[in-house]
Image (cartoon, rainbow, N blue to C red; front, side, top):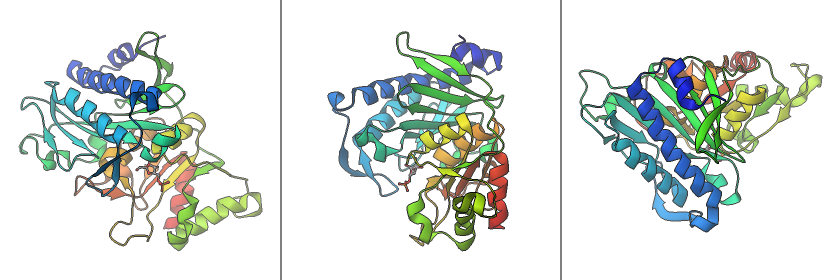
Length: 322
Ligand code: F6P
């Protein structure tokens, strides 16, 4: 079986970018170990702190963030990092060529119930003429990512990654510590009969979104003429991985629970990397109004509505929203 580095070499990935990916992978192997050890490693439960988004941080959020931060900042190719758990950008090596944005521990509410969790990351090139280590460096469209990926800490530890030449899935062989290729060039089915959304928010959606989901629920008796199944992991990595594996549509639409914050998922740490992975696997990823990868970020911790997965189903959904 091919390992991660032989696949990156055959995809012509530059050596310094490979080193950045290697650093992320090293951190994620440590996180995977801690996740497996769980209560035995004393990593479960919450801290007393809140992150910049006002969410109580779990111990594993803080530990995972620190691991990624320390290892990445020690890598001479890394110019700066931005993390969902950091208030601002953290500058790295002045001569570094790459910027790394990450959600160190996605799906935090699953930590204490032994459910699926993950790490999501995204890599950009440093922009010339913009202050080193500044927030402005990270205000690049998702289409400018040079690499995106996630690690899924489930029954197996998986790495799903793209450098723009297809989306590949690797499984961690814990006997050797290597990520081995288990699904190359993933292709997401164009059509699906499975959707993922947090239904408890239904009364807060706009009418068009409600009418789309209503039609899915009506199944073969409604406008869509086929029966749908629903799944919700409450961890984007888990839901997106299911879509990668057997198709589907994942939605976290805007809603009116909080007027100041209509969307939940973060553009830089969640939406952009997942959109690059999904598009490289033949799927589609949009906000309610445009392709996610074309959005011009205006803030580091910006949030966006996300609709992604099987291309034809995403298009159907957007049709309801027009
Ligand atoms: O952004 C964090 C996250 O946990 C995602 O991974 C997940 O899709 C979503 O929030 C779950 O949201 P909710 O708590 O509304 O189900």
